[in-house]
Amino acid sequence: MRSPTDRPNIILINCDDLGYGDVGCYGSTLHATPHLDRMAAEGLRCTDFYMASPVCSPSRGALMTGCYPPRIGLGTGGDGRAVLFPGDKAGLHPDEVTIARLLQEQGYATQLVGKWHLGDQPEFLPTRHGFDHYYGLPYSNDMGRQVGREDRWPPLPLLRDDEVIQAQPDQTGLTERYVEEGVRFLRAHQDQPFFLYFAHMHVHLPLYAAPRFIDQSRNGPYGACVEAIDWSVGVLFDELQRLGLDDNTMVLFTSDNGSRTHEGGSNDPLRGTKGTTWEGGMRLPLIARWPGQIPAGSTCSELTTSMDLLPTLARLAGTTEPQDRLIDGRDITPLLQAEEGATSPHEVFFYYWQNTLQAIRNERWKLHVRRGRDAEEVSELYDLHNDVGETTNLFEQQPEIVAELQAHATRARTDLGCEASGVVGSGCRPRGHVEDPQTLTTYDPEHPYIIALYDLTEAG
Image (cartoon, rainbow, N blue to C red; front, side, top):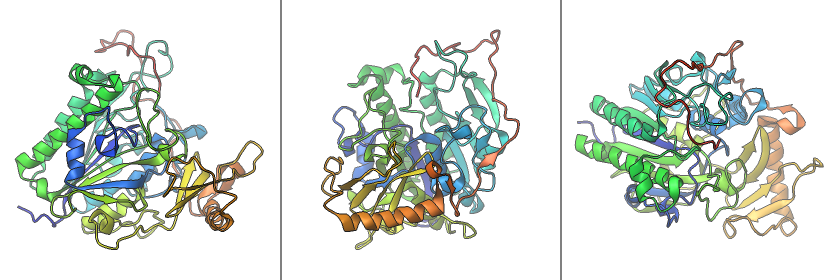
């Protein structure tokens, strides 16, 4: 059996639209999340962890590559839309280096279970980006056929590797199918290092949970989906223990962006929602557990980001982040292991939305620089140490702090660009592009779909 410090197994769990305040160990009183709460008690809980975008595709691109979304050309989806859609001509460039590719090159078995959302054309699929195998939905679970919107999208495709194995799957059972696939992967690769990226469809709209979770939820369908997530985490931990892999496996849990909140979610105590650059849109839970390496019951309040996971996991696997290109993430192993005196490797963090810089923070202060309708910068400064809800504007009282952050903003606009002013960043790389994109499925009225149409009309 391998030593607990010899290239650990890695499980990265990424939820969809789960808010900062949706988990018990982050303050939720509505959702029963005993497995996640136990994970935090046995590991580390980060309070100032950020995704690099408040929406799906840019966020996931940054997570996979360790780069701000504009740097990899994915600050938006195709045609300037917020995210990628079925049959989009854009996607993650085949030359980009993902966490999966780095680990694969180190001899790790790699699999993605769940949502990808970085392009559905053959050139962009997970198996072209370092994953040995893929099982899941290539984009959001609302991008299928729904009552009242039948002509908007083709049937939702469930893929195994590069092949559509089912169109329009029943979403009430999909999380259980994902967990089964994850367990099968752990068993198949228990004798070699592995990387499992488990990307939930929950709690993106439409909300479909199995009846058992609906019956026990105190917060309707939303709460049922949160508790299904927690159940899945419990199953994976149980399997790790059964296989004797618990001590040699690092498990990370987070979400791609904040909650919408209007369906029962919570970003408390943060202001804002998904799709905004208030804290509630981009500050997310991060729970890390690795027995014997991450001290139990620890908390990290240093500034960390999803982009840090690529260099961190690469080094744990015995390699480094790519040296031939700009990478924005930094190794945060000292923070995850709660080393005394460890501090954030970031002087500042940039909040980007649709290729435009919206805000910037340092260790304490956050300056909003999003453009108003008159093209003037919004004058808002918040003390995140004392006002995490961004309620008291201190712009006029702190001119030196404002000037310091504005200087960083100017540098960012040169490096990463600014769509509002038409500036293309000098440090940016192109997105992937195909000339003649095709959707993975087309609707056939004669096909015996398991369910012809979803019975909910909410779109996410």
